[in-house]
Image: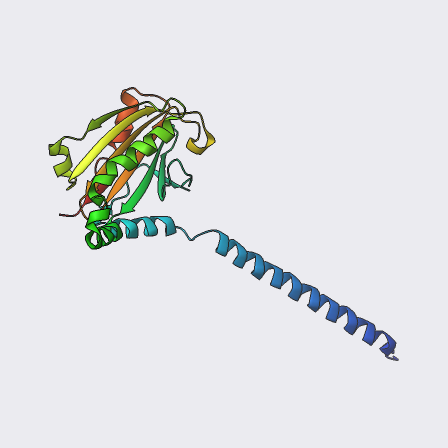
Length: 222
């Protein structure tokens, strides 16, 4: 039996090579775009735990430490003039958010020791700063209720000075439209201070119960 003759159309080979070449270029282009998009996302979004790491480093600079409180989720801090925080947490399904601000005093102390006659003692500035931020958060009326933190409580946190401010918030997207806030300031002289603002939509027992969940998360070292 005669074998069938296979005819190869060699005139079509250059065309096939051209299609293969175009296909390879297209695949390479798609891969390049994928790599570029992945790199762009990585540059825009910090890796998980990055903000917590930075926050802990700031605390280390003022001789303090942080323990992540149980039940909370990390949220992206809203940075604004009213309260320039560096870290934030949220209690899911409870309309409760916490923002942290760390202020270092070491550079202020260096300048103060060089020019004592022209500068105010840096340790006395914490209250002035806290009042300015409390008034800013309170909005047009600027009203707040302030009280000194008792020495026994300061001792628990190894703090030298401290004050709390309860205020009704101005309606603002910068505060996620929360209605109330409790701002607590703790200071370690010569090192720095920590300002914590707790946001909520009620001012009853549930609000302060949520605040109590934070009582062991921050502390100055001895």
